[in-house]
Image (cartoon, rainbow, N blue to C red; front, side, top):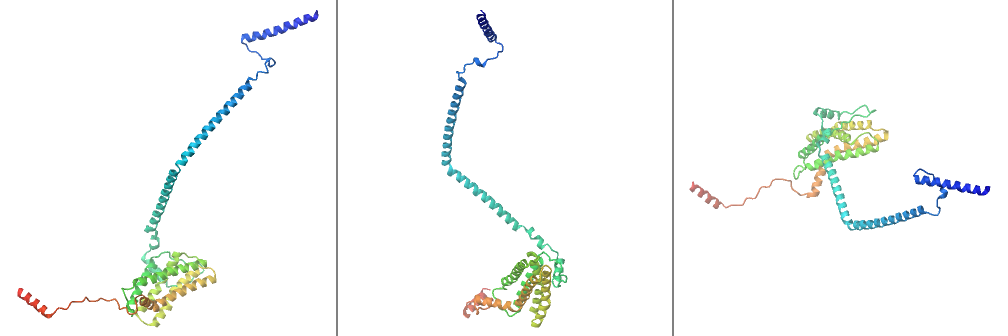
Length: 341
């Protein structure tokens, strides 16, 4: 009896439990869901995820196809408009290059056309020029430290033009046959060629010998060194004595040369370098004075004879030919004029 009663009691307890669960479900209250009562064979969530994945994959494929179509259309458009694009790029590059070149050309023109660039080299007082002319004839004694060199070109340029005028004066006072004017171009070419050419050559040697001098200083030093040449040639062109020329050549020309040599010695380190640099400058400077006195006129005559011929007469005025008129015509004309009066 006990077993059936127990079974009946168990069923009644189970029914009571389910009855409470149903009451809770119907009452809308909170309840705890027992996972053991869930159906494991439903699988609806996995099917939904598969459908969603398939749908997303199809959408991605459609977007990829649309993107490929758009890219193909863009490539076709780029291919069709490539020539026009290249033309535009070419024009833009050409315009840019033209503008850059124009700016550089205008900058260079304004640089060389600006007078203020040359102002420091010619901004000098006449008193300073006179002092430097006198100092160019006095050799310096102190060579242990670099001597100061004037960085101006007004004095040297005026000395070069003075030397040109002295050469022309010497050609006129000598027995040189002057053809076609005064040959100013030959004198200018000789003087400026020596000044610029020898200055450049000595500056190159100074660079090799490690001398502390600039190109402007070299031009100024050699230009003021021509002061002795101007004095010597001016005196000897008017007083024709060879002994007097040699005295001025050794005295006046030698002093100006010693001045330049002393300045270069003070700015050069090393006995060999000093000997090469100063010996070259002294030889060129003294030989140039000999050339101007003895050989310049003969060289000019030889050049003219070579270019124009040795029998070319000097340049002179020629009177125009007047036709010959008979005396009878002149007498008749004079009588007619007398009767008219």
